[in-house]
Image (spheres, rainbow, N blue to C red):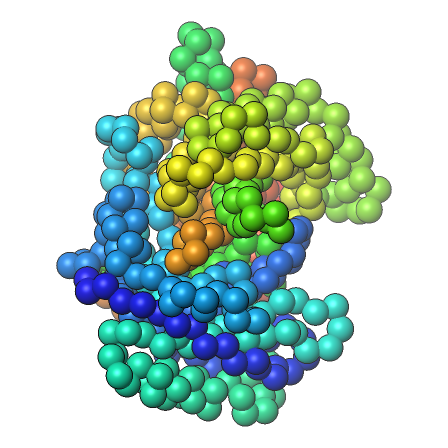
Amino acid sequence: MEKRTLTPVVHRLELPEGDVLPLLLRRLRDRPGLLVLDSAGGSPRHWSLLGFDPFLSFDDPRVAPTSLDGLESLLSDVRLAPGSTAEEGLGPFAGGFLGALAYELGVRGEALDLPEPAWPQPRIVGGLYRDWIWWEPASEGPPRAWLIVSEDSAHGMSAAEDAARRAREILRLIEPAPRAEEWKSPWPLEGTSEAPGDRTVPRKTHCARVAAVRDSIGRGEVYQANISHRMISTAPSDPLELYLRLRETNPAPYMGFLRFRSGEDACALLSSSPELLLELEVDPLGQRIARTRPIKGTVARGATPEEDARLRDSLLTSEKDLAELAMIVDLERNDLGRIAEPGQVTVGPFPELETYAAVHHLVADVRARVASAATAMDVVAALFPGGSITGAPKLRSMEVIAELEEEGRGFFTGSMGFLDLRGHAALSILIRTMVHRVQEGEAAVSFHVGGGITWNSDPGHEDDETLWKAAGMLRALTSSGTSPVTSPVDSQAR
């Protein structure tokens, strides 16, 4: 790819009050490379971002990178014009990579023999972007929103004229007053059913895998490992409308939507992830701060406020779940320690509890001051894939996962987000994530659910927990909007 310089040009937008994401997605649905990073609910709420029209699309296998080093090489050919990042309204992203990383990228520098996923998926999807919209949620009134369209030196003397043309084109699409049908709910949606979510691994088999992890722990091979199983379902043909349903049934702070191609198949990622892999920013003192926020410990929501409070309190006092979170925090501290200034890795309040539509989670906040010699990709590589969805020690737990699951994970437990031209990053962990595929005119989704296994794990309870986590996705796939999995008793039947 030729070297190029981008100069972001910021346009303040006037958007209507309320949740503008459905409106923007529907108006821009036909733009190439449509991608959303969506803070739809949960904690912490933050900005949302919609990218489109990448200048380098990874749908083209001739240019798509297949490793973190390959992605870093492509980013090195693009730079920001000096002084351009000072413009007000530029926001969290300044142009660069938007997309998703598959779990099978593995650990940089380590030769792991990982199986291929049942549904073929590229290693990296998305592309390099110069145009996007971002906005911040508002408690009242319209959101604060901006359109950024970058002048691109690849256009030579006409760079400013070309950027102005692209901005006018997008503004013509998004600025007209919304029509009533553009606010419509995605319910009902053709292609949903009353009983989606067929397991590809029976309960008995998953329980046996949990027992096998406990045997590995007993032999001293691992301290814990995260084991999952896969579910498949017929699906609506339109993944964008299905995503809008998903954000209603299972809102989360690190949601995402991305269309991509896998060979001849049209695919999409639909994620309602609550988990942060990496946030890399510069603090007010000019220090680069890396933050990861692992989740360990899950319990289903209660049917009544009293039951919900009891379940929440039981999670906060669970010795098994607290020990599991502590082990992963130690792993993440070690991972960040490889790129941090000496002695500059800290842990926030331990534990914290976060509540979502279907579950309560235990989380912890781990931060590091990044050493000057470390690049942004060094920080990503130090954490990827996230320790909370592999186990400890990371390499051996990944080998155990491959041996037991017997198929690759694809984008499940990979990551989605951005790496920008300033060296900033925001990447989720792809849990609660569907892959939508249209093959020979038939639409279907595939998704995994799992959990961390320790010596104290009970196989039956661990299988129940996977279906609590599936509940929000299953609700999005049902015509009634209610989950067919409502209790451990029901989950045993499935």
